Amino acid sequence: MILYIKYMVSMRCKMMVKTELKRLGLHYVIVDLGVVEILEDITQTQHEELKKNLLKSGLELLDDKKSILIEEIKNVIVEMIHYTDELPKVNYSDYISGKLNYDYTYLANIFSEVKGITIQQFIILHKIEKVKELLLYDELTLTEISFKLHYSSAAHLSNQFKKLTGLTPSFFKKLKKKRRNNLEDL
Image (cartoon, rainbow, N blue to C red; front, top):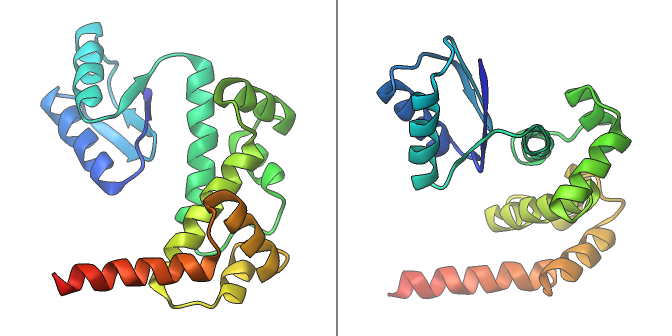
């Protein structure tokens, strides 16, 4: 049986879900970002208990098909941007469509309807979060970051970054360094 869990985005979330499944006497095959496969069917009592306990930790057990599909789309995007070393060579629409075996237009329409933003906007938001992370690591230049995240240029990346954060990448980096130095002085 497959269960879908919203807001499951880290190793800590996975560990918490595994603990909760064990506590309920459920045996899992896979516990991955947003998806859990268990060996047995879950009883209504176990389902309600799991749902209640996950909610206490900020996670949500999903029941309806649209919510499940939205979570699958989000998980593919988060995994693609944050957990792979290299973004796919094909367009994101082809990648997402191929991963989920659905027509991209169908996925895009449902996503926009439910989330109120487009898949492309969601991707951009996550790419900018990844840029912030890479800037803080201070291992790559802005040009290298733009290449790594498939921006046409460092200028395009900078414009998009400023549009979403209100800061230039270099100012963001200086601000974070200054904040880190102030914390070290305490």
